[in-house]
Length: 113
Image 1 (cartoon, rainbow, N blue to C red):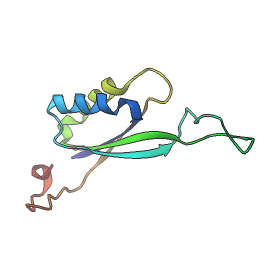
Image 2: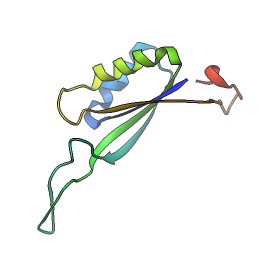
Image 3: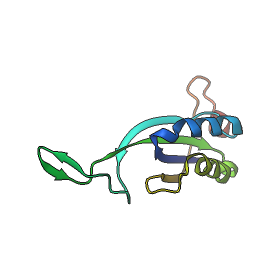
Image 4: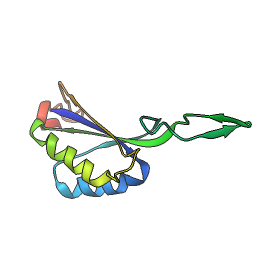
């Protein structure tokens, strides 16, 4: 199992949710609002007359746990749904998951996803 974390533009969240839902590859996802900056370096902001750079940008972090054989398809779906071709589109991180446990039933592993 793998965890796919995507940090994306806030305005692309609905596109991503629709794409992921209609694909049938993903049974659930978690969404968090985050602040940060990367190559985009934020934007210049004036605070009490002083120019401050970088300001942290509001982004959305989407976390999805999938079976190993679905990772490439899920990553491709995310890219298609959120890509604008401009700086600030975001990043995708893929990391291994050792164990998943469904609390309600006690199921473990792939059955718990």
